Image (tube, rainbow, N blue to C red; front, side):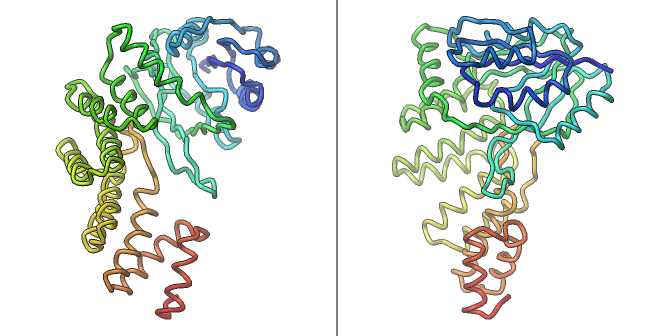
Length: 359
């Protein structure tokens, strides 16, 4: 059986660290912890599970910290997690089975990363991440923020799901400040940096500058297509925030020049047509969202509801507004199957029963 070392960077994580280390200590062979300046009991908790706890002087560079700790690994493979990640009992069993059966020729194991949930704990936002790496391949983290390891070699996809469960807000300006430091110091910005920098600017409502940066990213020949498609969505939101809806439409349609239409983009086009009260046209785009291929393994951000619940419930509204009540009811039933307790579904159920006698 192959051996796996868990490599983590932490800071002031006393509230959650035990939650993840307790199950993981039974699943991996070693645990390596890099502390970047905790002033709480994080290191004391870490030492309950491992003697390999190291201090690292923080220098606004996540890759530097992660590379520091992964270099300590002397197991066959190393795995990374954040302190506020969770692995459910079901996924603990899957990880154990993976460890017992994994082929030593494997270089990288990809795992689904669930980061958004609805009120019924359905995963609404997720994406695949490189999660387990072969130590002898000497993989390196890249990027001072939104760091990543570029997968290479023999890559396999696992059915293990890691959940990201924050219990406290992050440092909202930290990432933005790191990118600003990079620019001020003349540090080379890779295409991926422009993508995430533009997103950070959007989050902080710096829409004009976000547009400038994201459009620059779209021109980068080496930019990843999944990031470029997501940039079109973010750019559309920027234009809408500035009242430039025509430009918002244009950038969404521009995404079709790069790849087949994605459900998330079709839903956004549908929503914009709904705002214009062009319900039949909106319904067309929601129908396209239902038909869009689920390209989750491409690695981009994946919003599950964009493939089923959102287009179903919005088709219901659009067709009803267009006077096509029987068709609208059929889409209501689709939405009802997916989320029977959703307030909009409950309201629509009453509407169709009371107004149209449909059940």
